[in-house]
Image 1 (tube, each protein chain N blue to C red):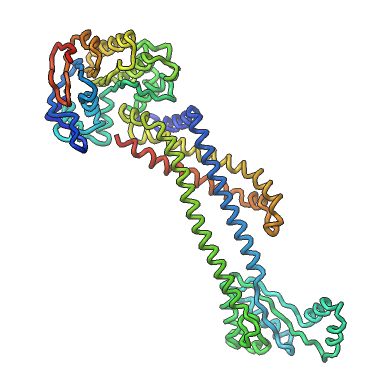
Image 2 (image 1 turned 120 degrees about the horizontal axis):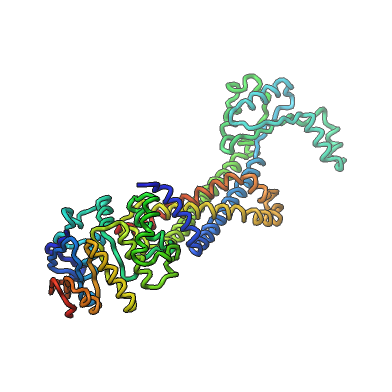
Length: 313
Length: 226
């Protein structure tokens, strides 16, 4: 056979332009579906941003004894920061704590006078620990509570942590556990919504392509009856599907610029500082790739399935 | 060349459309198949292209059994048979040239062959001046001539014309029949199904008459007698 690939490409390209009404309707529906998928992409972004902000606010605190020496304090700090689960540590010295108290109570002479009555600094140093992951706090606290095994002699300078204090005064553990549960649930719900959304989008794309091919079912039968092979009949429809995918992706991506720009102006404050337009431009290539793959892949698969029954002749 | 042996076609529910069909068509014949609507004419010609399969019996083209062909062998068979339909069935978004070229491309012909043969076959059906027209820019008669050119372009051994004049006026009907006659005179076997008494009586060729899925008459020099 001479130049079959070239002929299939040429034919698909020509059909795309000659079946203008079908092409325009298919691209419009595909573009709308892709924009809806993008909206979902933005929702995921907003959700992740909010969760990150909540996670960022979570930390545990290690309270040092008042008589802890600077050497011991730093030794504990270095040991803890060497744990792989630890993202960052921040040390507030006893002196800084005292100064912070004074600053926050400078309008409260009774409190300041009470402080002066005391012999020395009543505040100890505090180590604030942020974990890589919310689920890692348990391991970090276990390491700290394992005592001299992990921290050596410097363990004795730790007074308590606010994670699961044995006296029951602090119980950050149950709060973090609850938060973890909520995050997990939201993730599970998010995955289900993604799945339902993908199925719905696939159905819309499948039916659009199916209708565009259904229009040509008689012509497909003629092509088969004049002796064309299945691939030669199917080929141009597949090329058309790819063109639909490319055009609708480009159109959706272009329309998202003004849409996100407009939405960002109205929602940045509401979304706690997340600017949708910036989020879009920062994730431009990944979103473009996702939409292109989804549209081309779904159009191609839809074409293959839609055309299959008309080829059985 | 073409043989039907004890062919029966029955659809689910016991609806019989062809019953005990025994028929031989030789190379170079022009055979007309006549009968009322529902007599089984179209089912019979569909089976020659393996568009439909018999419930029982054998249909053979030369040495191969048509109803058993699959894949490339079926494609090869269809390239040896040209089909003309009552409703033309041209590819609506392709020009006259492209419609005919499609049959050649499907048969794997080169661009040079296509450029040479398509204008030539269009001249045969007297449509050389409409080469770049689209089907919706043509009259019924012209569309049917394009369909004949498409059926003819791969030099098939048989041309099947299923009610080719059903949608045409008398002048176009005459032209189309003359073209089919000319094709037959050049050696191609032509199988024609029709309702048109004038066409049958004018041809003075073999006529097979069908009724209720059976062949009730097969005359070498037949006339329309329903």
